[in-house]
Image 1: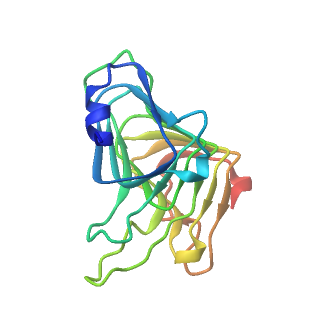
Image 2: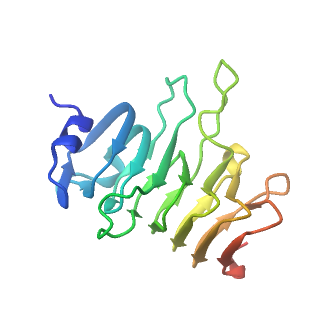
Length: 202
C-alpha cells in the first residue's frame, strides 16, 4: 500500500486525509502544505497511531483525534516538531487537537494551538545512550508563540519536565493540568520568556 508520506504528499492543499485504524509507522513524516489529518470515522482514537517523528513545516496543518507514539526500535531521538514556512501565509497556524503523545512536542516557530491533548513523555534511554525523545513534554522555542489549552501534561513517569520554555518564547498556557516532581519541576528554567502562564496549573 501507499505510504502515509506519499498520501500526504499527493493530497491537495486544504483537504482532509483520514487515517484508518492501525499503527502507521515511519522514520519521519513531513508536512509542507495545509492538510487536516484525522482518524477515519470508524476508527477508535486509541487504535489510530502515528509512530515515528513528525515535522510540521507549514501553516494550515491540523492533526485531530490521533495518537503519536515513538518507535521503540528507532535509534533516533524522536519528536513532534511544529513550525511554519513562508508558504500558505493565508492558512491558519498549525493545530494539534485531541491528540495523545508519548513524544516531546517542540514548537519551533509560528503560533500553533495545542488543545485537549494528553502528553505523557516516555523518556527511555536506548542502547546508544540516547533518549528516545527530549527531556520535556512540550518545548517552546524562542520566537515561537504557542497556545496550550486544556491539556494534561505529565512527565513524572519518565523523569522529564512538563514544559521547557526558552527565554525568547511567547505564548499562553490556559486550563492545563500540569504535573512535575521535586527533581523534575513542571516548568524547566526560571525564566518563562514572555509566556503567559495561568498560575493555577502547577
